[in-house]
Image (tube, rainbow, N blue to C red):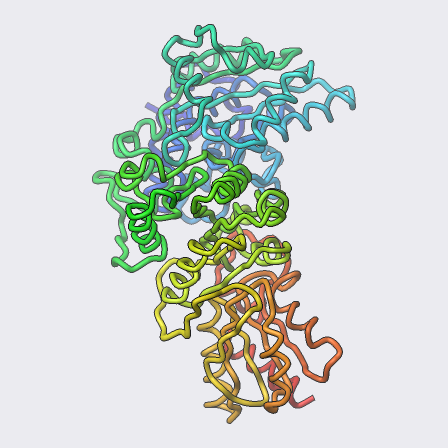
Length: 589
C-alpha cells in the first residue's frame, strides 16, 4: 500500500483525498510523529490527541485564507507537517528546523507566535472583528484545550466571542486534562456534557449564547470532519465541544497523561527515556519536602500552583496527601496571585510557585492585589534566567517586571542554604509580599552568611574583600562572579571584592557608599536577566553622579528563539574572559 503521507505536502493535497485515505493519512502521521518525538522529545500527549482534528481542519477549511489559531500551540505538530514543513517531522536532518510552537516567521499558515495558554479566543475575536470591518468573509477558528478554559482571558474571550454576531468557530478540545488534572467548577459542566453526549440542560456554552455542537469522538476523522463541514462559513458564533484522548495511539502516554504531557527522547517499545539523567538534587524536590513538612505541622501553610504542580515538586501522590492545603487553581496565574493575597490577608501562609515566563501574566495582581495591600504572601519563581528554549518561555524578564513594584521584596539566593533561609523568613514574617528567585534547577551549596531578617533596609554580603573592582553577582550568577574574580587575580593581579547582593529589588546604601573609601574605582554587576530595568541599573543609578564607574552585564532586551545558552552568553559578553576584558579596558581608560 502506498503511503498517503508521501504525496501530502500542503493542505491543498488533502482536498483530493477520499475519507478513507484521510483516515490512512492520520495513522501514518501518528506513526511518524511517534518516531520523531521518540528521537527529539516534545509535547507528546497534546499532539497525538489532535491528529485527526488537525487533518479534518485543513481538509474542510481553506487555510491560510481561513485563519486557524491554536491556543498555546503546543499541539501544532500535525498542523506544521501539513503546511509545507513535512521534512521537519520526517527527515532527521531537518528536525531542528522548526520550533515547537506556531511561528509566523516559519509559515503564513501560522497566524501568531503563541506559547502561553488561554489567549486564542481573544486573538480569534480580534481576527474576526478585523475581518468584519474590512468587509472580508473568511472563517476564523480557534482550537482551545479544556485546560485553557481555566484562564481568565479565556472567559473574557468567550464573553466577547458569543456577542460577536458573525463567523467565529471555537473548538474546545476536551481530553479531561490540563498538564495535570483539571481543577475548577466549569469542569463539572464539561463532565456532565461528556456524559450526556452534549445534551445536559446545564450548558455553559449555550448559556453564553453560542450555537453548540458536540463531538463524542474527536479522534474519529469522519465525525469531526462532518461537524466542521456543517459549521463552515457560519454567520454566527459556534462552539464545537470535541472529546479526544490525550496521547491517543500510544499506550504509555494514554495511561500516564501527566508525565507524557512533555517528554524527552524515549524508546517507543518501552516508553522509557533514552538518556536517563543521573539523579541530582533539585530545588523543586527540596521545596516539596520543605513545604510538605511545614504543611503537616501547620494547617495554615498552603501551596498554590497555576496548573503546573511539578514546579513545586509536588507529584500526584504527594498532592493527594494535602487535599486542603495543596491548591491548584488551574492555568490562571493572575488569579493565583490575588488568591494568595487573600489567603495571606486572612492570616494563613500561602506559597505560590510559578515559572518565570508565566510570572509576566500576573503584573496587575502583583501590583494592585498583592503589593498595594501589603499581603505577606510568598512567591517562588522557578526556571528564571537565560535559556535555550522557545521565545514564548523566556525567563529573563522577571526581575525588571516584579522588582520595581513598590513594597515587594525580591530576593535572589545564591545557593540552597540561602534559599531556604529566605523561604523560612518569608513564610513567617507578616509585613511584606516576598518573591524569591530560585537559583536554577540543580542545587548549589556554599557557606553563605545567612540573615534572620531579609526585610529592608537591604543588607548585602561581602564574600571576598578586595580593592579597585567590586563585583556584585546576583543570585544564580554568583558562580560567574567567582570565576571573574579568580581570573582577575590569577591573570592580572587584581584582587577584586566579591559581593552577594541578596536583593534584586533594593540597594544596600551603606555598603555601596563605603566602597569608594576602600579604594574601589569600579563596580561590576552580573545578573541572569535583562539589563533594562534590572538590578544593575539600580546600582548604576546609585553611583550616577560619583566618580565610580559601573559596568552592567546581563541579557539584551530581545526575544530569543531556540538559541544555545552558550551562544547567548557570548553574544551578551557574559563569559569570564569577556567580562575581564571589558573591566581591564575601562580601568586602563
